[in-house]
Image (cartoon, rainbow, N blue to C red; front, side):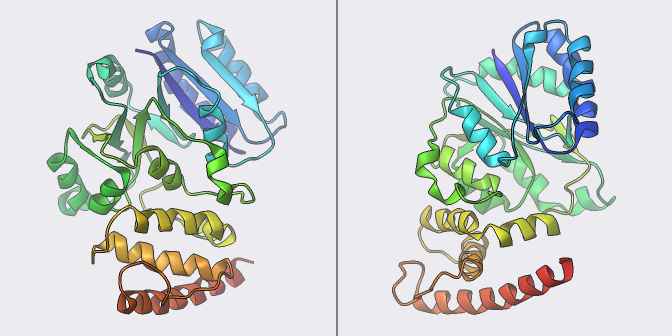
Length: 308
């Protein structure tokens, strides 16, 4: 079992320091089988004290590697890192505002080698700052129990679960930045585009095990994320187009949502829309989706004005 934790961080050294207090003892415990790759998306000295502290605390200094770069954004940084690796070791992306649940994470690492012929494992993230009634009425918690240890594509996962925070262990990946021209000129790209490209088939195993928790994302998409997508519409179009192309037309929630957002961000990108010529759903669904998209588009424009 060889695992690399991949963390990208931007202007948040205190959060990275907090994450290090949890990860470094686990690195020391696994004695070479666990590494931590940190990608710092601002090329200054704001992280130097934190990195120096990490070096003092880790038993084998080479098990933590930190690189600085000009801000490329998380998506491009992750893809660049993956394209530099030739082995089939496990990779897990843990954000700087997440934390691992020590004993559960360690137990999970010990069991990784038991997943035969599995190249990707998805687990739910435990959200702590939620209401007392969240677990009582949360349908998604029941879904994780229902689909525990089942394999599916990332599209099917989103179709069944919708928006939910997850962590993914993966290996034997194949992704070339040259096949993603939509991200080259944009600073923000949805992480879903990465998983849609990596897991188009039923090779993603759902495991109902909380090994990472977060205190920051219980409300789902934030206004900041929405604004990022508005200002980077080309990659957003690509995400929703892939959802639409991954499954035949249906009246499922994810299909309708993807169709509306496909038109919504096409409007932001000033892309001409010809609903008569598109091979998506039927003309009536496309007409409805476009008109709903126009309403949300107008709301987006108001949001931009308010925030500016």
